[in-house]
Amino acid sequence: MVILAVFALGVFLLPFAFPTPPPIITRFSGTQLFSPNGDGARDRAMFSVRVREPGTLSLIVADPSGAVVRTIADHRPTSRGWLRIPWRGRGDDGAVLPDGDYAVRLRASAPGGKVFSASRRVRIDTTAPRVSGFSVASALRPGQGDVACRTAAALADEGTVTLSARPAAAGDETSPVAALGPRPAKPSQAILWPWEGRSSSGAPAPAGLYLVRLEARDPAQNTVRETRTCWVGHITGRASAAIPRRPVRVALFADGRALPPSTRVRMRLYDRLGAPGAGPSVLGRPVARPVTGRLGRARLRIPATVDPAAVWLVATTPAGSALIALETP
Image (cartoon, rainbow, N blue to C red):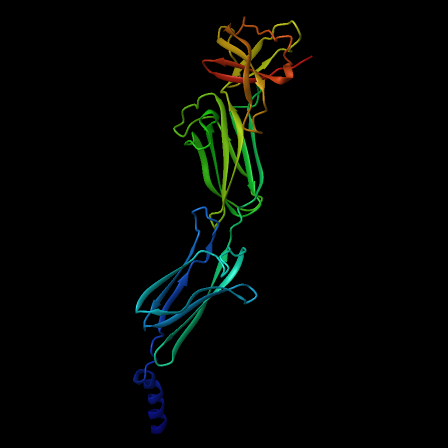
């Protein structure tokens, strides 16, 4: 029994008498996902190595088949401390490697035959998320409610979605008047934005054409942008049928109620380049002279040379501007 007790005590104390030396590399970490596409966002991976004993170090990248596609460092001399090694996603031939998972293998050696090896996974993803749906509907006709722009967006891939609105005349790169997001979006999940035509402060945005932009980002910060148009009028309207040689009159509505006949109105025709929600151009050059007067008495004649289906009528009042499509009998 005494012999067994002494033996057990010896086994217990042996590690303390002859402790296992720490490894020559005490830390190896690195980027797990990046996108070397040159857009300035997550364009490179960074690997960090903490060296306890100076020696040499090799760092290689292998593709899913195990083939070496990049030698980042080969028998590089090291000193004690932190070592940071960047990689821009290129192979030994200088070209950016295809999207996919790669193994980054580290091997270090130090005097006395000491070696260390480890491997980390890194993913290259340079593909922007796919937009599976993006629509913007403007409130142009009476009875469509107070929402100026009804926007719906969906992605085919996981990411985040930001929706924003800017005056079309100012361009797509100006600061947004209003925005939604960024919102996380799973594949096929609908992101809805019923914009009421107000700025971020809650004040009514100036009437006119707006650019509604969708910006989608994936976890690797790949980005895709798409733009639609929306008419923000704060009022809606309808016109009487555009019959040749018969003046057109309009009825205008705000908050579901008809504007009184005494309302001052200015009516003008514009070439119809498109419809809100589609391309960036909706209104073209003015057609004929504008008409100004009281809503109950103002009438607009359609020139004989003008096709009513090829123009927009814009009716502007102190309450807003209505974009009206002319109808023919």
